[in-house]
Image 1 (tube, rainbow, N blue to C red):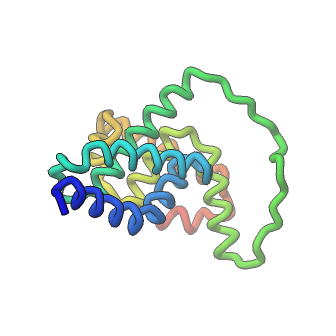
Image 2 (cartoon, rainbow, N blue to C red):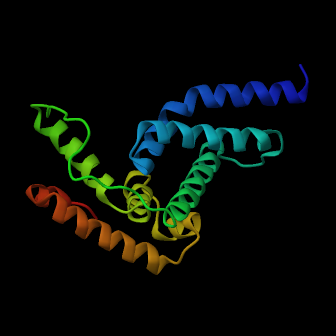
Length: 172
């Protein structure tokens, strides 16, 4: 087996093992299952093109940075486009009787209401547990921008989810 074949095999194993986790992160970034799958596919394709020469100790960390940058590029382009917002959602979903599930669904819906830059900062800070400096580096902005986006996002979440205030207060 040649070096190139070995690299292809290692990439295939990595992609098969980590794609579900990458899709979960991408879903948090995009708020849409199909967009999340597209984001992961795009990031995997870009990573595959460099896999043989990739000298990164953590390939998952590398691909997540590719995903974040792809998403940042997408919402920057989106900022120049107009989106049609409707007051009534297209489909009605029956709420789950479980309180914990209701909170998760409510949080997901509230996250969808946030502007993409704020949602991205929250995912990186609290889901990925990155420092402000790491988030700033990934997004290509200052630490002050990360702080202000985080503050605005948490304030907006509190407005969107007033009944969960004690849960949000526990957030660092």
